[in-house]
Length: 250
Figure (spheres, rainbow, N blue to C red):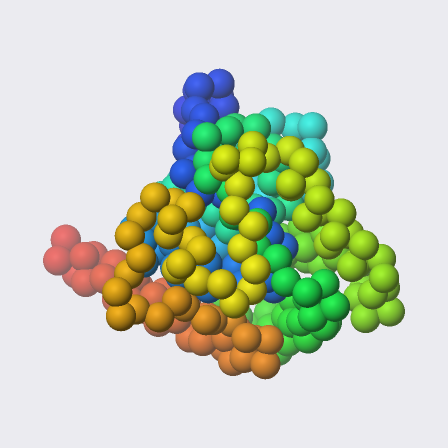
């Protein structure tokens, strides 16, 4: 963690630390967008990064959501990243946009009915995750419950609150359109790809490289298991390196 002095310095001076800022709710193609931006040489923050990146501090987002008037060390939250899409970032869009007024904003959208159906099948709860899972994932899950499930989605029974959630989805879309400078805003519908994204960013369209299409709802449980396996492997590798270093020092 950064020192209090460093935190205050960052909060006082740092702006425009994100070049691209995603405004779309989760389940609107945000993981595909993350992978596309990474291919274009951005380093993009996404909920999956909070689960897998051991340098991430999920508690920063959790506390920021629970205490919206308290100062937040956003520089630490996005350390190592120059773009952000998906939750938790979308939950803090207004605050992040105020700090990054020059960022290119990408609002991913899809049919609201299909968005709600996807939410019901996926992010309202993480299936099969229990206390035996790696601590980084459990910390991220705790944050996601506060920020996404109980916060942005309003709690349990997402299926029974369909009209409420679709209304929130539509209101969010209109809000982004109203507050973002038109020249800095791209509204990207699910299914659109390089031909829409690259001209907006002023970049060449990749040749012979299909636009990513990731994180389908039916794959969500398998995705979680894959994330767990990757984190476990990373932790085991880190432990092995630390043990070797200790032996060499002995």
